[in-house]
Structures are given as C-alpha cells and as structure tokens.
Length: 380
Ligand code: GDP
Ligand code: MN
Image (cartoon, rainbow, N blue to C red; front, side, top):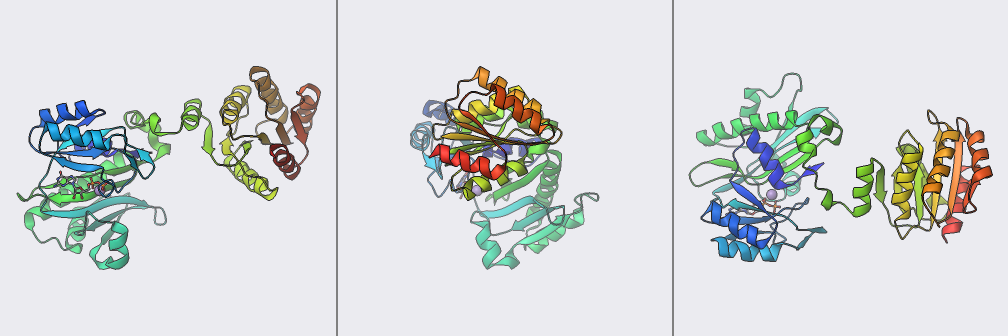
C-alpha cells in the first residue's frame, strides 16, 4: 500500500525524522486558512500516489494566504500521470541550500534492507544510478544485527558528506529511517529531497512510503490511511467485500479460485481468441456469499459480455461451489451467458447439480479450453 506524502511525513515525524509543519486541505478556502495559520511563505503540494509532481506543476510556492488559495484552485482537479488531485498538503516553505537523496528499500534477492544515499538528490535517482553509479552509496543491513553506527558512517562517507554537523544529523536520520522502515513493515521509505537549509539544518522535504500489504493487520493505524476514493469504484467495492479483483479491458469476465488458476484462465481465454475483462480470484473458498459478491462486481462492468467460471475443487468441494453458483443466481439477475468448468473434488456431483437446476444462460463444459472457447464465442 502506497502512502501519500503527508501520511509518510506523519510517520517520519512519529519516529523523529525532521519534517516541516503542514496542514491538509481539500478546497482553496482550506488552503488559504492553512497558509494563514502557518504564516509566512508556504508551499502548496498536490497529494497524489505518483511521483514527478514538481515537473507536472503540482508543487507551487506561495507568499501568503491569497496566493496559496490561487495555487490551490489551479492544482486541485489537475491530472498528474492519470491521478486526479483531490487533496493538498500546505507546508511551511523551506529555504534550500542543497538537495540529497536517502532511501531504504527491501532487497528481495539478499533478503535485507538496502540503504541508498547520494548528494545528487531532487532529480531522477534512476538517472544518477545509471550515469554516475559512484555517486550513489549503497549499504545492506542485516536484520538480526540491525543498523549499526559504523554503517551510518560508511553511508555518509561513501556519499562524500564532509560537513560534521551534516554528518551527525544524517546519521541520526538514517538510524530513525531504519526504525521507521522496520517498525511499520515498509517496503520502501524514500526521502527525495533530503534538504540542507542555509542554516545547516537537514530535513525531509518529500516522502515516498510503501507498506507491505501483508503486514497491515499489525498496523491498524496505517491500514486506516488507505484512501478508498483513489481506487476505481468496482475495485473499491471488491476490496470492501474481500474479493481480489483487477479490471482489464476485454469482454470475458473471469472468475476462478486461486491466483494461479485465474492467471492460466486468462491465458486460455487469450488462446481461444478472446480478451479477459478482469481478473477475479475467489480465493480458497467458493461459498455462496463469495460467489454472489464476485458475480455482482463482474456483472456490473458493462464491458463484460460473458462470464467464465473456472473452479478446481481442492479443499473446496465441487458440489459446494455449484450450490454457491445456484444460490448466487437466485439472488442476482444476470443476463450475460455464464460458462462453468468444474473439476477436482466432487466435480461430478457439482456438474450434475448445475445441469439439473441451472437457468438456460448457464453452460457447463468439461475442460478449461472448451469452457474458454464457449465463453469467447458467447461474448462475440
Ligand atoms: P516530487 O516532484 O513529486 O518529487 O515532489 P517534491 O516534494 O520532491 O518537490 C519537488 C521539488 O519542489 C523539490 O525538489 C524542491 O526543489 C521543490 N520544493 C518542494 N518544497 C519546497 C520548499 O519548501 N521550498 C522550496 N524552495 N522548494 C521546494
Ligand atoms: Mn520528490
């Protein structure tokens, strides 16, 4: 789960990483009030889950409340890389002497957290890594040893920081960033830029923060930060109902149990000459309510012309899934043709149940390929 800049900064602040004071605003009037409260020069920052806001015109300095309101009016509603700006972060403006880059990410290959630090911040880090790899200090942290003071020194000297006060401040920030990263189960904590002010103060001016979805149950406060409005309505509905759903752009609605099976179903639909309209995974289950929820979400998509159910009974029994489908069809009116392929545990009982009781728009096919062909045909 990606956090907005202001949410990441809230976590930074909690762990003692210096950030500027700021306020959230969703209207130009709120932006004006925020600037009034903060006083002095402020920066109006678009809050979107994508980078490059500065280049896109989503970050503007304002000399006072009036100008903050003006900028807010211009930035709200702006489209930045496909993300519409609905929220602003109004923050006390900083004077910038230098811009550095400090990040902590998870290196899956080595199963260790990886620090990256360079004096060449503010810009595209990929560019620095590609053209001037020597300017980028990299350092892995052993999860059992934790982040050690000598490692902080290695990182700082490695990037060529010479000022003693900066060295001290950055060492502390790196140590705290490691604590933030570990304690919030992050996959990425990036500060770009980490600035030095003319007074020599080092602080985080931006935040890019990704938390491991699988650890969110341990962090209800972070889980609550999820902004449901940032998702398309079907995906939002699916999330609320606990169904895994990804919208695609074809016409065959796909529903299966297990991510692997669903992925191969997408391939088989393509093989049969069709295009999947979505990826929908019921998970291990297949109980009536799960089927109802999933069918509701899939059939709400106007692009869907036929629905392909691909179920392999492992722990889930075929007859149970068949009952789930029948029950779902009693509760919902679905006009699109539905093709079912049922295999595995109690598949025969399941197929029989469907054949006896199913409405005329439901077709049962014996194999995955035949089912996909049928669904593609019916979608045409
Ligand atoms: P990004 O473009 O999405 O990465 O957004 P950032 O928060 O990193 O801001 C982009 C750039 O805007 C920074 O690199 C700074 O140069 C500038 N900027 C942001 N905040 C301030 C500020 O408080 N004062 C000044 N002078 N510039 C700022
Ligand atoms: Mn940035």
